[in-house]
Amino acid sequence: MLRSLFSTALAILCLSSAGFAQKKSALDKPTLEAYVRHLYVMDSTVTVQVGDPKPSDLPGFYEVVVSASAGNAHQDFPFLVSKDGAKIVQGNFYDVSQNPFKKDLDNLKTAGAPNFGTQGAPVVIVEFSDFECPYCQKEAKVLRQNLLDTYPSQVHFYFKEFPLTTLHPWAKAAAIASRCVYGQKSDEFWKYHDWVFDNQSEITPENLKDKVLGWAKGEKDLDSLKLAACMDNKATEGEVDKDIAEGHALGVDSTPTLFINGRRIASAAEWPTLHAIIDEEIVYQKTAKNAGEDCGCAVKLELPVGQQSAPVPGQLLNSSKN
Image (cartoon, rainbow, N blue to C red; front, side, top):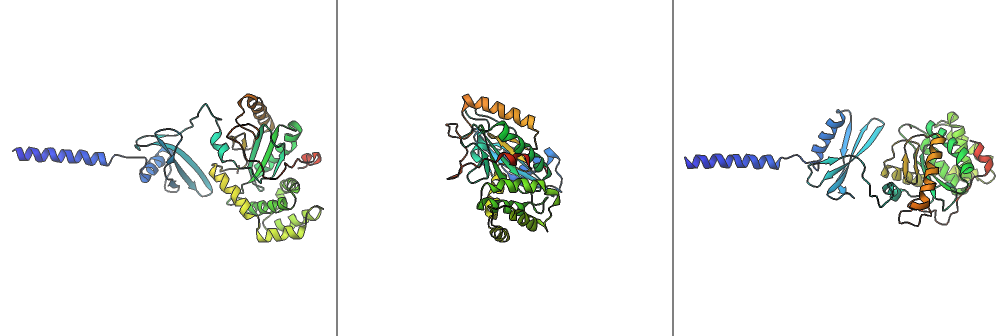
């Protein structure tokens, strides 16, 4: 009888231990994938990948990124997972002693990027753009027609390449060509930038090279033969890929995406909206001094090494998500 009771108690204890051992944990990738699929109603047509846990700035939690993709669509879902795997948190948390956009500011690299405006300005704008994107075309006109006229000394603008190759077949080739132009003469980049967006509807994968070289022949400061060789050899593809990798690291998944002193704007924005944000940032930085290029703080965008900013001649301002 005692042996029977002991056996029963031991069996219950073993079952309880097994149940404890099988307790679900968000640090188990299949478990987290199943949970996120249910949370967002992602069926088998959606590919889900769970990243490895990384250290988080929030004590007691890891950062885990879950990536979902279906066809050309892609989205990352960052989660905070408690170190015991029992809880997941989605959302933003802030350290009030630091700039609220510090994480993105730390990951924005402006060295060597085409730029215009004032070096050392209190407001830095970084745009990730695609030459074939119609929304980027619209945003380009807004920025080029307004930034320097409105803020001749308070804004520094940087352009980053982010061609969406699955949607736009000639975007990367145009990006490579733009860096070929920039490598020859930095000021010519902005003429190229405006010309491509002005002629976007007439460009195809087949005629891109001929049209670019036809444009270059009218630019006395460019060597069209060197430009053709640079395009053929894809000599600047590494620079473009570096911008793309930086965009992915920042979670950029659409164009245009702007960062205004680190504040992310993931869509084309009208000038009144941008104007209001820049004005607020100029006032805020007078006392906060935690963003911009001359902020006197640890969080600072990189200045182009050995390169002066490239102000755009006034006449060029009037030319010219997916």
